[in-house]
Image 1 (tube, rainbow, N blue to C red):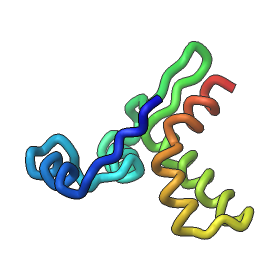
Image 2: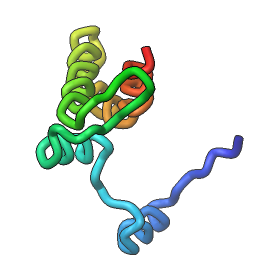
Image 3: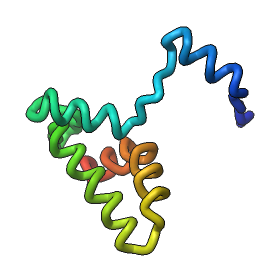
Image 4: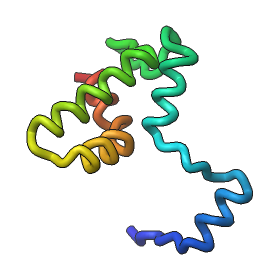
Length: 93
């Protein structure tokens, strides 16, 4: 698989064009948890997770990582980018 690297000029153009924002996955989850707390965020054949529950799970993952010794700034950064994979695993587990 070829890794695509974005230059700062590319990032700036994507943001300027509205394709990208500075919002993180966690920002999106937190906003949806505030605005749509009881709406379903993740569903599989055995589980249903609301936006509020999903955000709480991501917070719990980041807290557990910090308690395990991962520096807070890394735990929070990675919890936002890894949350969909981890929450999908939690829902299917």
